[in-house]
Length: 547
Image (tube, rainbow, N blue to C red; front, side, top):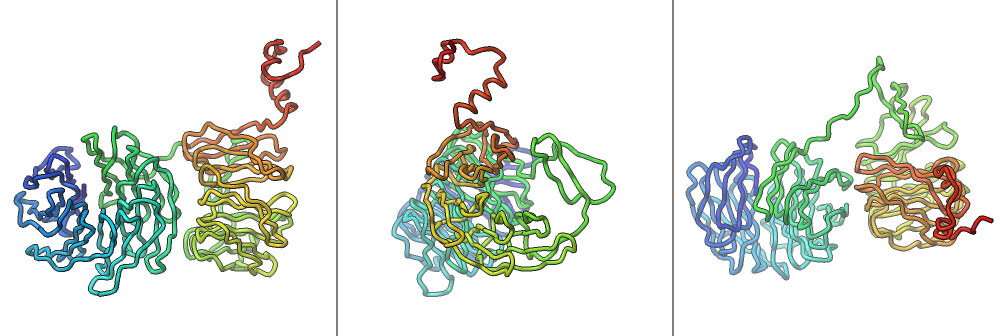
């Protein structure tokens, strides 16, 4: 399935051997293109929108004139079923790939064969030219993504990391990144210049079948055999939305040219067009007479406080992700997408230091209780310890194998915790830089963490929508809090350590009483049950029978 360059028409490919053109605004069929003798696997528009190329299981690709619906010529040469095709940005070349393990290049003018690229060890599932037409990417059943330099005899660069077939590959609009989707249920984003993985995105519950990068470069769309379409932030790899409605596998997904709609094609026989614009506001609060630059919830979640700008801190070269006051309140630390941490004087707005060392977006940050040090976590897979006084790096903790998504400092300052997309939870000694404990692999990605005031309880917010409480002394999981219908984004303890608040992608925040002993259970029961327990109830909860 593919959207026309002008955004008015969708082309769909089907197992019924046809390609169909649809008027998106009128939601009706415009034309049916017939000629293939087996399932049509992929369709792609020419850059000028006047032609289409299609691939099919009949071992051919065909080029069509859109205005008349006539077949112009066929591309024959593959020796097995064709899986995908793509048009080079200048409209002069077409790439196809097939189960014969080959990528073939063709003249878009007359269908003449130009080159055959051989390097994969299994079927080639997808292929796409880079936006600047200097490279070509391929996805294969051998678990690799191939990056080919066009016009060169150099072998392809193979990007490895997926644990199963790679089904889809797509370039970012600026040509600096590649995204790949796999049967291992993950999406990975790669730096092309460094030939290394930048992001790992989990969320689908079955094979990732197709990917599409929004034309504005800010989001990725994916579809899967789990019957969902998911939208992700391209910079951070965060799941933004889950689009449900299909009744079977979703085979393909594509963005409209204005990046405001997504179309999906499914084995349930339908094509669906989704509004991918940001969600509308829920409540509008008015009253300020100047710009509103700050907002914060009260700890009980009942009141929202807002404030007008009193000082503007400028210096980051890209978006700012997190901001924290030091314990004393006389400094501010920020981190962002420019791979740096910056320290500020909030009274004057002056930038006092820039901490450099991370090689990717800095996702998480925490001050030591005494305000002398900082711990940071980054998409480069490291956590780094910094002196806030001298603005130098003290240590780098490089044990994690994926983005470090959460960091926390124990109340006594003697332990730091790190969580990662590799699902591991680690405790470190910030004085000696030694690993104290490995609390093992969590069931899902750790998105945030918070240390209880007592210092021996650590709460985690996980991708599966749960919050979990660990005893860090005994290295055991004490409680699992379930209720959110989407990922848990944040977690924080109440000042007295008796409650947790969690925030989720389901647009709710929840407050949980933390019941970890009999006394606390009895106290909660007394606050909610206005009668004495019966002997049977006391027996059920293993409580002594009252005299």
